[in-house]
Length: 240
Ligand SMILES: Nc1ncnc2c1ncn2[C@@H]1O[C@H](COP(=O)(O)OP(=O)(O)OP(=O)(O)O)[C@@H](O)[C@H]1O
Ligand SMILES: [Mg+2]
Image 1 (cartoon, rainbow, N blue to C red):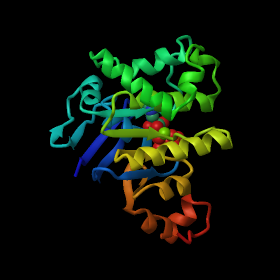
Image 2: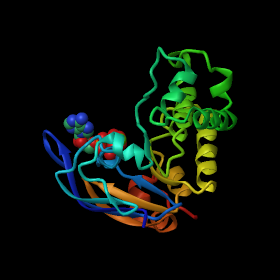
Image 3: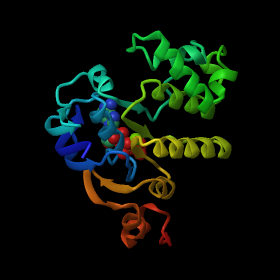
């Protein structure tokens, strides 16, 4: 197992949002977390990236405990997050934003090489390199955020609702990008409001409800679960 989460309790001022979460993620797999608004999906990712300290519980990544580590240290272990809300610096250029993804690398030749790789994967990083990020559409910004997260050549990528609010074309590009990341052996934890799309992309699914894991299994098990199908997948059962 690359990632093990055991009995995590975490929350904000109002009390625990996560109430005893257990979750395991194998290397080179994609896990999709689904569940209603407010279930705690983003909170799980925030705990993983170190932005929120759990009150109780254990998290290990490749044998290292993540408990007590600062976000920067977690990043250095190779865990990157693309947050749910847009996160580029709007008045900086596209290239500056992408380069920021590699701010902890001191090797400028390596940074240049990675920049070349992400430009190839995301042409917009090159074609709009000198434009202010704030002038890009929401979908274009999402692609630049993906590019930025790949600058560190991460081992695990946390994607929080990557398809939210995208036009159909960018939506497709985002899905294709996730597939490319999967085929290059990356480990992905994905939160997706479009549960059917997210689960179809994933190896495993986790249904979160009120801060607890209600169901976990392979993507087919989740998609075929009648109750879940009814609650979160639009009321029809999958034929997957
Ligand atoms: N910064 C915060 N301060 C206080 N409460 C918060 C904060 N962020 C989230 N919460 C609360 O924690 C609960 C879980 O939020 P979270 O964002 O993890 O849900 P989610 O499953 O990602 O929902 P959504 O589908 O709407 O993104 C919600 O009740 C939310 O109001
Ligand atoms: Mg969320």
